[in-house]
Amino acid sequence: MKKLIISGIVGLLLVAALLWFWLSRPPAVSYKTATIERGTIVSSISATGTVNAVTTVLVGSQVSGTILKLHADYNSRVQKGQPIAEIEPALFLAQVEQARGNWMNAQASLLKAKVTLADATRTLERNRRLLTEGVVSQSDFDASQTAHESAQAGIKAAEASLTQTRGALHQAETNLRNATIRSPVDGIVISRNVDVGQTVAASFQTPTLFTIAQNLTKMQIETSVDESDISRAQLGQPVTFTVDAYPERTFSGNVTQIRSAPITVQNVVTYVVVVQVDNRELLLKPGMTANVSIETGRKEGVLKLPSAALRFRPRDDADKAKLTAQSGVLQGKGKGGNAAPGPKVYLLKDGKPLATTVQLGMSDTGFVEVVDGTLKDGDEVIVEQLEKGKKKKTNSGSPMGPRF
Image 1 (cartoon, rainbow, N blue to C red):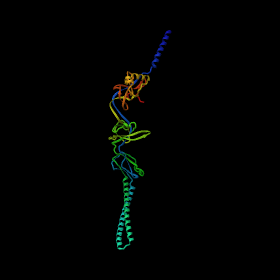
Image 2 (image 1 turned 180 degrees about the horizontal axis):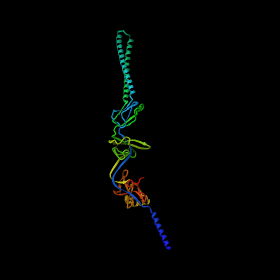
Image 3 (image 1 turned 90 degrees about the vertical axis):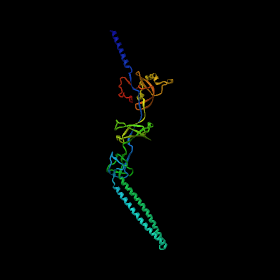
Image 4 (image 1 turned 30 degrees about the horizontal axis):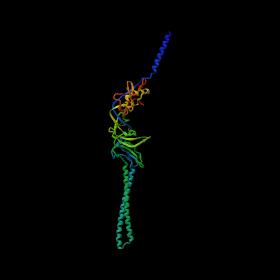
């Protein structure tokens, strides 16, 4: 009986030891991989901008007064010279009448001056003959000559007054014409800032009454590109962009201008890149925010490495030391046993990660071009390490790997 008890105790100790050994083992690990494949890599610059009409005209008023009529509203199509608003003309009509009266008075003054000059001329000629005959004295002749010269000066003064009043009349007539505000271009009214009965004051600066877009079938986007990316922007590069109004649709355009003037906001320097856009369908409207992608480079049929593979590193430092010794061939040893320079990625060989170095080229948002190295089409590279019993990431199907 005693031997049975001792055997049972020994068995329990063995079971406990086995259970402790099982539970104390390090958890098994698994790896999520991505396949190396060939494809297209597009390098781009991301930026945001605002959609605007290529030519926008601000229509104002050169005279002050009260708005009497409006002949155009939002989205109205207008032609060059078409009346779009009227300012109360009564005051300007009175100014025209007053200026015309002054002008007519100046004309009459000129005629009177001419009559006076003609009379002074006759008197001077008569006294000149009489002076030779000794009938009139020298003082009378001198007086008639002074009167003649004074009449000539009167003519000049009357002509100057006539010119002055003529200019005042033209100014009053111009103000009367300006009371009718006309469109300077063919286009569409995109903004109206006045209503009937509103007083317009043009004393210090011309107020803006309407904003007219000359042609909405051709739009442009003014984007702000960071100084670190501006060197890659070139004229003529293709551009794709989206707007919040049509999130499912992608629009296209081309770079038409790269402005050299820097814009500094909170110590961040950006430059304006102008993108020309075809808007024949009139879907884009001025002021829309555009998320722009400027294509700076494209390569077809290159070996594509997922960017997540460059971020992966094994979690066990002891394993990493072994990997360095085991992957000498994959790293490409040169003279002296030195590994080839370049970033390191890990291949999955027989369930274990093996390191290899690569030389990289162009990159996009998800992939990097492999320029040189031992990687080939179809290789499996590790993008994430998963421990047994832990929940797998929901985004495991994406080549981007885990989010940081």
